[in-house]
Each structure stands twice: as structure tokens, then as C-alpha cells.
Length: 481
RNA sequence: GGCGACGUGGCCAAGUGGCAAGGCAAGGGUCUGCAAAAUCCUGAUCACCGGUUCAAAUCCGGUCGUCGCCUCCA
Image 1: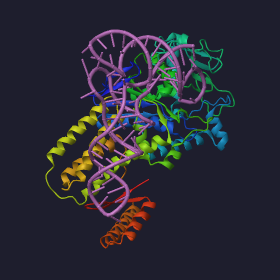
Image 2: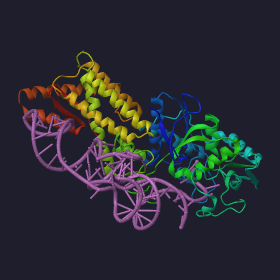
Image 3: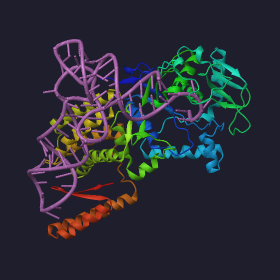
Image 4: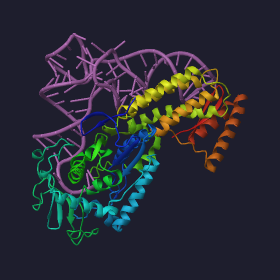
């Protein structure tokens, strides 16, 4: 059983073969840190997170690099976001980007997105970007004009290979007026001359300036991952021009391929339309977290394939949430029963069943990280688990441990949708004790058929977010909402 | 206009040649003091039209519709 990934470069599924046996080097274009992260970022980085997690599950030693774009393209044409942020908050540019870098990590941590192994800042890699531009000039794929350096697109026949675009097809200046100093409208900046009002600028062989649009990703990806490296991830919406330009720069300067596999995630819409500030429909990650727990947001996003577009609607997230409760409820009940389970031998039939389900889970994930199908396997499994947990014969410890292991490995380590146990904090210990006391008081009331009292305890706890469920073998509690 | 993705039951969604996974919602049953949870049962000619094939949601052509991108937001 082997991993196959859909490579955007070839537009088909290919066997994953890393450059170095047992290792996986992966780069993903990170955020520009000028404002709060929104749910679209969550979709992208969550998709990539599960890819990284599964590669690790398979035993690959992963090096995951994701840049932080803190170098603004500060020429204020009225749309520059970093400048806008700087004015809005009256901060130094680096103060602004530092603030939003921290918030970004905070949001990702909250969503259970594992941190990249390296988070290089563009501002910390100016020399590498200058060097890239120099190499391209030396190789005849870039030229210097008035303090700026442009990539000479017509000189590089590979341009367009990723996005499938041909030069003639693009309408020059469709959105932005063409600068006349460029030789060809498709040429793009590697280094830009800085005017006096630019706040962030650096010295270069061509005078004061700042790096071009795509330079940082090329420079940092190859610096930390080598060239070629294994996987370049990102969002489909950046395939052109950003990814295309990155690749052209890298390959034209080094003469070898850039990344072997391009894995691009589908984008996210809200109620059917693109999220944008001007439409006023953006949802920040903090907004979403205020409404749903992180595991539910993950379940929702992972319920469609990473390459597919996702439409974020209240109804869909709620439905995903209820599905998550079923999975998590079963995993939770396994843990609760484990506390009082008796010894015994592993149920051989159930053990075989689990082996089959694990193979099925891996088969789905091996097929281009098909998380929604893998989640389907977990639901099938959960039906059997629930049946076992509700059987007259209580399951024994070794069998429960196997099931627990299964949930932790798949729903937990790979998909990241298992609720964290929060038994560590002292408050949580105290809370668990209080809940247990109430369960016992209610149990007495029930035995004495004082139903009103019993129901009141249950109702009040429910309003506080704790659901009680009476089972033949006792009452269990579940944190809800 | 160009490039690309997509259109599967009320909703979400897997499935790329061989009787259409799974979740949510709905109805019915079991269990239960009640409730909740769980479990069982019930539902789709896969946007439309034409073609290829013994066989198509799946391949080819066309139509309609939705979304994304088209050079400095990375």
C-alpha cells in the first residue's frame, strides 16, 4: 500500500517518491501578516496540516517550512495592506507584522494546526533574494532597469507549465497598468526600486529597494529544503501568477526542477461567494472559534477533499458538528469504560475488525489524502464500537485499549479531531469531582424515585454544558457545545 | 474574452467503467422512569442533451449553471 498524490504539475495522481528515502520536504506559502486570519486561511493550512500529519503517520521524517510574509510591497497605490494596517494601528511596520504573526500562530494553535518546523521571515532573507536576482541576471533570465530587476519571462520557455497558461493568452494589464520599463508585460519584479516613502527598504547592488513579489518563497524554500525538494503546497488561487513565477525563478536560476509535487488546496467561499472585505462577509478564525469548537471546524473542513472548494455555511458546519459528536462520543465512552474495565483477552473478532478498518483508513488516506472518505471509515468503525460498548457483556480492558489506540492514531494524530483530554488542569480535576458528586446525588434520587429532583440536576448541568446519559452500567457525563 | 475547478438523495459529501460510501436532517421500531445517547429499518435512474462500450455518475462532444484565477493581496 503506497501513497499516491495528485500532482498539479502533471494533473494526475503519482506515486509519492521523496528525494531522500524516508524524508519528506515540504514548503507551503504562508500568510501575509497584516490583519487577522480568516476562515479561508483555516481551510488552506488545515488541509496542509493533515497532509503533514499523515506523512508523519506513515513514518516520514518531515521538514515543513512555511514562510511569514512580513515584507510589504509598500508602495502605496491605495491598496497596500501593510501600509493600511500601519496607519490603522499607528504602528511600525515590523511591529504590525509581529503582532499579526503572533495572532496567526495563536489561531493555528487553537485549531490544532501543527506548527511548521521552520517559519522563515521574508525580512530575514533579503540577501538570499538579492542573490537570486543576481543569479538570474547572470544566466540571462533577468534584466536591470532603473534600480529594479525583472524576470525576463519570454526567455524562459518553462513559464506556464504549472498553471497551463500561455503567454499570448494573458491579457496584458488586465488589472494593473503595465509599467513601461518592463520589456514584456508578463515580466515580473525580482527587486523593486524604493522611493523615499517606502518604509521598509534595503541596500542592493541596484540601489535602495525591496524584494519582488515572488522572490521570498523561492529563496527560502530552496535554502531550507534544497532543490529539487518534494512537496510544494498552497492554495489553488495562487497557482497563477505566484506559484508559476516562483517555479520559473527557481528553475531558471538553478537549472534543476524546483519542487517535484505540487499539492494545491481548493478555496473557500462563504454562502457561495468569495470572502472579501468589500463584501463584508469575512469570518475570522476567532469569530468561528467563538461559535464552534476547533474539532468541529476541523471536521467540517476535512469533510470535503482538500482539492475541492468548500462553501462555509452555518448549516453545513452545524451538521459536521453533530457528526463529530457521534465520533467523539464513542471515543470518549471508550475512555470512560476503560477506567473500570476488567481484565481479559483481546476479543479476536474485534481485533481483526480493527485491523481491517485501519487498512481501510490507510487506503483512503493513501489515495491523495482522502480525509472525507477516511472519516467515513471512522464512522463505520464507530457503529461497531457503539454496538460493542452497549452489549450486555462489558468489553474488557485489552479490547478497549485497542480501540482507544485506533482512535488516537487516526482521528487524533492524523485528522486532529479528537477532543483533548483536559484532565491536567487543577480546575478540570475539581470540576470532574463536582460532576461526579452530582451524578451520585442524582443516582440516589433516582433510586428513591424522586424523579423531579433527578431531572433538575440533569437539566441544570445541561444548561452549564454538561450532558448526563444514563446507561445500564451507570451514568456518564459529556461536555457539550 | 482566456485559463482552471465544480454540478451526486432535503443539506454536506466519497466514489473516475461493472449492482451509488459516510454524516446531518426526516419518519418508523428497539432500549429507557423520563430524557439523552446508541442501534435497526425507510430514500438517488449522479445538471441537461448526444456519442463510445456488453456495461458510464465515471470516457468523448455539446448545452446550461456555479465558483476561482487572469501579473505585484502572498
